[in-house]
Length: 219
Image 1 (cartoon, rainbow, N blue to C red):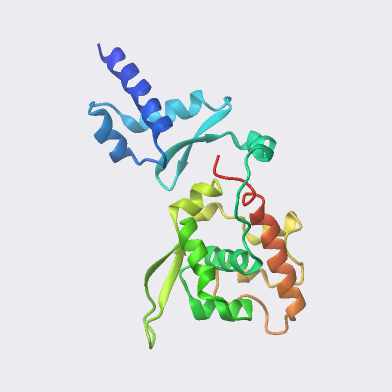
Image 2: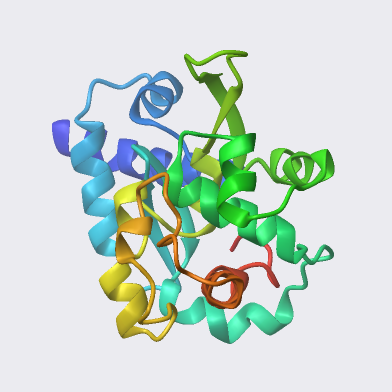
């Protein structure tokens, strides 16, 4: 009887995840199946069973979702067209928030070396990739900005710790060897003697790293 209950629960959880339009956490799944089973164990079993399939089960920020297998997503990318192409300013802003969060607008502008329009953040809000989270305890108490679970989901990241570090970016040829690699994860973007052209290089390279997913919808 227990075997049948677990089997039924697994089938139900699989169906729920397929039908869901967003990743689900364990508590949400538990509330939908109303069965006393080890949901995490079942999720791990499903993850293992689907590992060689065209879709895989991913855990993203403690939430679970079926998505196109990573090694197939590029092959089918040409079949799915993203209507909006993000501007250079938006890509740069997203990259800075991802690596420096929580960060204020003025800090973003200081890192970029140029101001940007309110519309840049609004695009990221609309995509659901960035959100305000609290205020910095300095005069004026400016808003702090961070990335969201939707950002993690879109870029197939389990957590922010899965963002490429400076060594990985350098190995892939995505950052200039002259850059101070401590810029990733700090509030100082480059050495004081780094010229503007070098900043343009790093932004262009981060654009290359991120934009591969921007010409397609979430799979």
